[in-house]
Image (cartoon, rainbow, N blue to C red; front, side):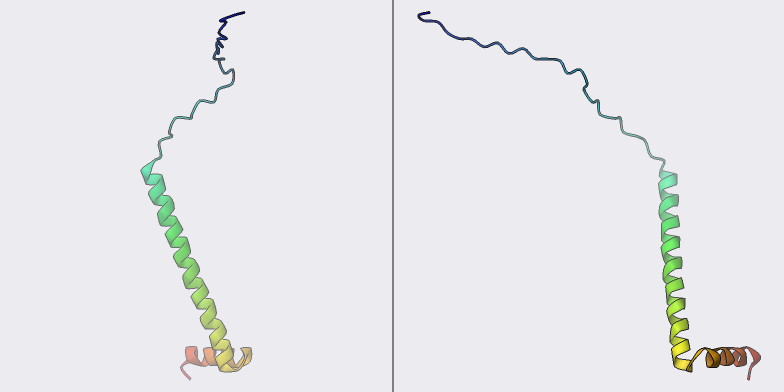
Length: 80
């Protein structure tokens, strides 16, 4: 075994279960715009609703209680 050179030959194995990348899905622009618009409307409605609730609580506290609040509300409607 004089002057023997070890040569390693690497064989490339084929992968049996390769994962192919999925092709890009096309997205309908009108659907995305509609979803975004609906999201903006929902958030705006939530902000307005929270503001109204805060004002209602503030009015209850400032009027002195529920009974005085309702009495003031009816007098405002009746003009008295």
